[in-house]
Image (cartoon, rainbow, N blue to C red; front, side, top):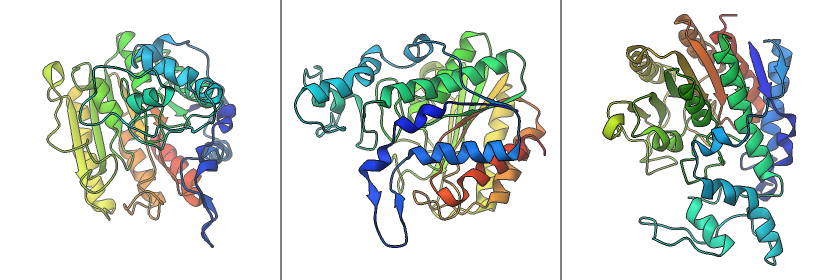
Length: 343
């Protein structure tokens, strides 16, 4: 299995804003650079196959999914904030209850217009790192197109909360959606299975009116968990996309048995769609004791989930999303990949 990984992701580290100094914890609160390094070291140690940096496919795959205005903001926000006197990396006011008709001139007004929370701060190198995270996913998609059966995109930062013109939830560009859309443009039929603890609201929004990409998501019930306003079981898509979006919200404390039932139901939807490529948005924040989740999946569970997907021998692209329990992060990711490869 080929892995794509961009080592310069460490230049973006929101964790420095939210350090948890509680005795005994000694970890950053939010999505941190160390996550990508831990996964890389685990994949390397597991000897799953070659690991290479991504190629550069340019802006087009990104702007085919995201609005030019949002992309332009991500590219230039840091310099505008820095030159505006003072520097706060997140918005202080958000557009709520429906977007207004006017986009503010103020950089902080624009941040409030194109972001939906405060968990995706913009630093000096944020755009570059987000750009190469997207290129990591597209490079993996290109290798699938070339005939590789299973490819892993070790993307950081994650992407599945970023929609057409909104970023948030640690996400700036939707890596999975960019890769899926690129594959569709090459004439392939793509199914996305999102198994992150949180609903991939951005992925859902991007494909909600489309029939050329199936989106299935298994996640915590949004009545209880982030992102709260998306991810309910009665969201089936709209227009041409009706019945091409399926959500499987699960209660807090879900264990392997309950999770596996929803997983099998989602796989049935995938099989009926008959995709050329299955794209997995892999979040391992479903693991027991993950600081942002309540599910209780074990490392062996991830291996069994990977094995179930591998059983169908589909061309499979795995795009990394969440997972925040540093102690088991690497082993949970590699367990899933091991199962996928039937090792």
